[in-house]
Amino acid sequence: QVQLVESGGGLVQAGGSLRLSCAASGKLFSIYNMGWYRQAPGKQRELVATITSGGSTNYADSVKGRFTISRDNAKNTAYLQMNNLKPEDTAVYYCNAKHIVVSTLEVWGQGTLVTVSS
Image 1 (cartoon, rainbow, N blue to C red):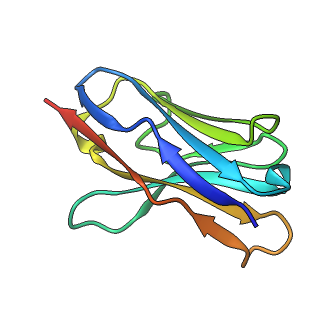
Image 2 (image 1 turned 135 degrees about the vertical axis):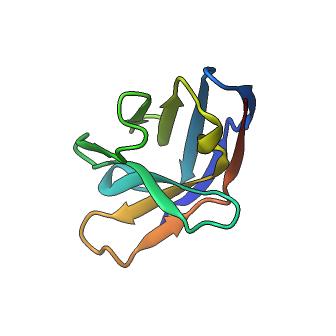
């Protein structure tokens, strides 16, 4: 089973960009679908974007056209490129890995904080 460590969060002004990384340890990264979720203060965790083992992507409407999810199986890493950030993007961002066959095999990272100032 993989273990996940996120990095790349920080403070950025509105309109700026950040790239989050999710490094996976363990074996068989390529057989996990990867996702990014976020949780703002006082709100429930929500889906941001997902990418399948085959590279198909899906985005929340709120980030379409601004965020891009990608993965590099050779580096066991998933990424979230975030452009044109808005204050409402402020949240803790979590990386998620879900086995492509046994969906109950699911792993979360510890989260990385993204703060967007207006």
